[in-house]
Length: 312
Length: 68
Image (cartoon, rainbow over all chains, first blue to last red; front, side, top):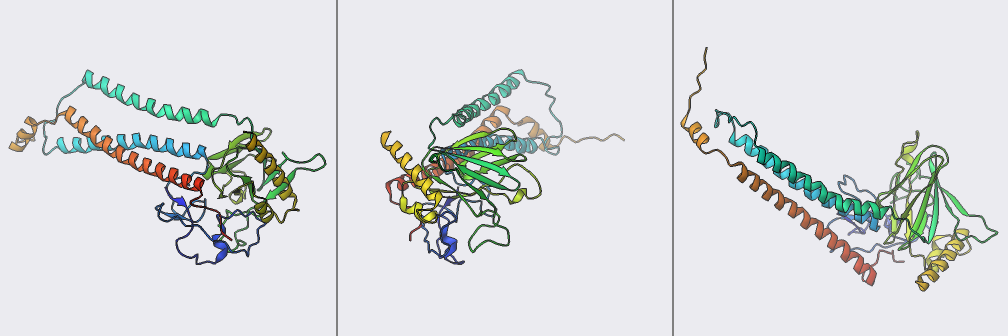
């Protein structure tokens, strides 16, 4: 399982490439130099960000307990898969070996065997029981409703972009913070940005905090999916679906729309930015200064989250 | 034209030394368990790496925040 660390050698494409683990929102100055923290000795492979690597076979690194549970379940099931594959392959090869027509010209006339038939019915039926236990445990834990999320974000799907709305911490005379998030066109990315993954305005959310995402569409069905977080929530016209996540580490996570909805379906992305919410300096740097509406909103949220943490 | 199959010594030996189904099943399960066990070891190793990563992150020994 590759982990997400910086490049072990200096990024050949320039300093902008190394900003993927920064806490920057889209508003951070593109000219600010960033350095990557390298964890080479811990991990087998190096990936520049929480996005799929070329020719990747496995899952992206987990950033939430939910995704970690999904990967653990996959590994548990894969154990049985390998066991059955090796066993069946062995029996097949040995049968071909023992009963080849040249070495065994007279075939055996075996019609049935009651004992063995009972055994090879009972024993395989035990395997799904061992698979079902962790599967149902994960399923029911994923369905648990987060009673007290720190932030509720509404993700509204459009053809072909997302609109995000933060409406938790507004004062009475303020409207919700709402912004559109368009994928950066294929011919317009900056040096180091991922093609068809980057957006102009990222979703900024706090780390290690229970979040509630409400997903709804404005037109046709969509689906808000972020593989690193183990989230995929359909946006169905006429209803609002809810999902909850708790991202355990800072970073930039990428997602892609997972419900086909027209010509530019492949161009819709949902990258999010996870950062520590308790740093006013970070807020001011990432949101165009402390006076920016998003910064004020997140500062208010930071206060609420901080006081909640103090009370707990 | 009748085709006569010769009972060669090799065929006689194969007939007398028929494979034991129980033995083959037991060996197959053993090999499958060993292969599955190797996968499990890989899985536990990956879990340990993830746990170590987050422990070090929690303690502040490492950071994924870009330095200025």
